[in-house]
Length: 157
Image 1 (tube, rainbow, N blue to C red):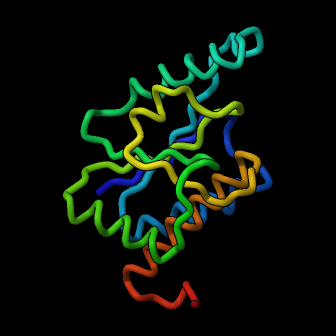
Image 2 (image 1 turned 60 degrees about the vertical axis):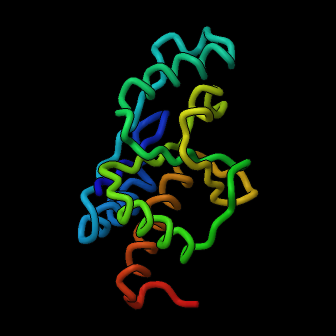
């Protein structure tokens, strides 16, 4: 199973880039993984909030295949623990999922078409995080889930 971590927005912030890349590299010991950073449309500044979300959704959705398992990160999603995330990844693997795509939406969230396409909507927290911090948390939590699956010492309960 390949993991795709996807975010709509600017490239990784210089202050967090090294940490994000470190956790991403660690995940490669368990699964193939890639980051996809989707730049907002060039005319984003003149678009309404809804039009921007629709434009971002069109760009993102064309990159998915019909078999991709889409996990949308949204504060209204389901809260799960780190062990539950590890079980979730194991279940996708057991189902022979080829690609699992985690999406952090744009500045205003995502269009309804992305919610409709999502197989699962996950909330990292009831708090709202800046996108760059959400990227770091996502990478760390996927790494943590991998270590839980292998019963390694990184996760302490």
